[in-house]
Amino acid sequence: MPSLHLIELPPHHPLACKTDTYAAWATGMANTYGKDADILRLAKQLLDAAQETVDAVSSDTILAVEELLLSTLLVVRRTRNASQWINRVPVEILAEIFQYLVFQHPFLTHFPPTSRHSPPVCQHNRHDGAVVSLSHVCHSWRTVALSTPRLWRMAVLCCRPRSLLETCIERSRHVQLTFELYSDTHFHDRNFLSPLLESHSGRIREIYCDCESMGHYLQFPAPILTDLTLMNLHVQDQLPGQPFREYVPQLRNLYMDNVSFCPSPAISTNFTSVHISNSRINLGLFLSWLTSCSRLEHLSLHRALLRGAKSVKRRDVHLPYLHTLSCVSAGTFVLRSLFEHLSFSPATSIQLALRETYNRTVEESAVRVWASMESTVRAALLGHNGRHGFIAAGESVGVSIRETANTYRDQQFSVMSHPLARAHIQELWIVEDWFNQPAPICNLLQIFRAMPAVVSLTVYSQSLSAYLDALSRNDWSDSPIPLLPALTTVRILFSQAYAQAPHIPGEEKPHDANISAFAAARASLGCPISHLSIGYYPDYDGPAHDVAPILQHVDYARLEILCKSQVMEMPVECCSSTSYYSSWQPWRTVWDHVFNECKNRYCYWTSSPFW
Figure 1: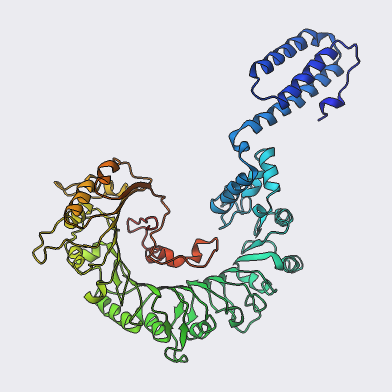
Figure 2 (figure 1 turned 90 degrees about the vertical axis):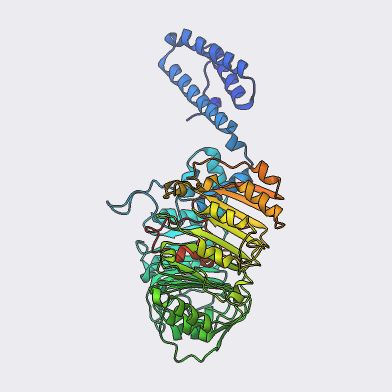
């Protein structure tokens, strides 16, 4: 489209003066802000003049005027876009917003579906087209997207066009790259893929491989690779198809799902975080490999091991830096064998979940696993067929009680530990998973007396009023001291699940519980609450609580809106891993592992992190 200065009319042409007026108006539109009346007046004058003379000029002149109008319209639209609030945001901040959208939220794409049965959206964990969509919104956004190389660091090898891959790598310039390889890729041409990976090996920081046939491509030195995800790979240890047997000095985080091998010990020296799930790795082979992971801080095993550790001597695997160990197993044999051969620091936090156990073997299983541990472990979670308990061993700092139907039907305590161990518990969660029937809380209240050191409590239960009432009393027959006398921090969660749960006539609903009266009662008993938080899930439609009367009895109170995907965390410190995958921190989402197979049967909810 020609610009204004390329279109000229004869000096005495009847539209020449009008063209000058039009050009002046266009310049004013492009450079003047806030003079709305002047702009409208000039536009009306121009339109009136053009209407009066358009019948007396040639078609060429009309075409020239039309081009002028289109050029000016483009200027007007650009000016309008520039005046929008999003385009007034500094470029650096807009680039940060784009990065958050690209890497944290799923995006719909306009690429064709991979088959006639699949929708035209990206189904992968990472989205390689989000930044492309953002760059097509307007000229301003495109400028920001093209000038921000880190937005293009995702190199996805799948069903997408090869041109998109090459474009992303080119526009990423010299930033560190993340490569993703999938089973539906058409990049199986070794003459293309191998040179591509090797030529950029010095820039690859993260690799996600979900394809068995792709393993043999990962044989190049990767000097800055820190995060490696391997899924659905089945190769034998002695075969050259095992990924990365060469130089990867910075590799810290390993995530493996549905694999049949252990990585080469040569690349395991610097591992700090390892997660293995849905795999069939021989326990003896795993323990032998674990001896090379001397700097391991976090280890997560979810149905990862098979029996067989006779070749490994007892207690010959020492992990001095291990901070968190999370295990989900189908039985006790693997766990017992694992703990018999492992030794670690007394500060290690252990979280366990047992599968496929029966009610008659629950306590026996707990005792066996507990006996195989070191006596000074901090904490351990035990789950079994819908009944979930907690082993508090040594000086434990946290315990979670989950109310389930089986727990109360069998009249079993949720906490299976020695009373001396319970005395060290400092953090307590009560999370109700089963809303089909009201659950009595008498069994849980009985063990509160054995937890005098608890300082923080989270309650997400249909029996909230009963809990608050019990904690507000000091007229117990066994002791005049209130339950949980050291309690200073309380968090209460609400959701729509309460409205859907059966309700006992004559009893208060959870959202009707008098939280202010509870805070006042604790203060009068000499055990005041200092911090109190009330959280609402997005589906909650009940009345909001008034914080003003609560503040009369506590030092700090707040209302918070929870995200539906927020996860309850065990009380462990942050790890050193900085990976983008949530799966890199499975120990922080242990509930998702425990209830992964029964989400449809349980009313499954999670909460946000504790303070």
